[in-house]
Image 1: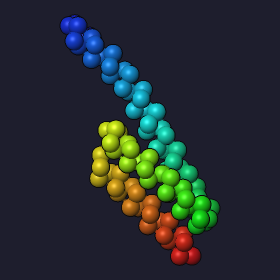
Image 2: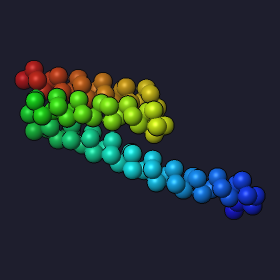
Image 3: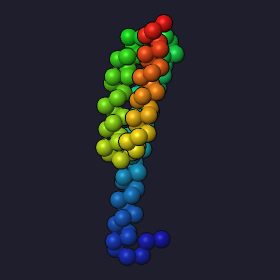
Length: 89
């Protein structure tokens, strides 16, 4: 348990930050799920537009410290390859 005033304040801040990060992570997962569903349905146009809307959201997660830069780049790259494969069909 926190004893000093500073450690009590940091504990309060962590609780607030955790809620914010949880909401951000959830929002990003929603965008990713939309892309996945569009890919699964085979709709190339929907998949492409879903990916275009998901990309800035994923990178925003990087700037906010929710994801590492390489993790986000890897996710976007793999999704883009899968969307491209759907378009090729």
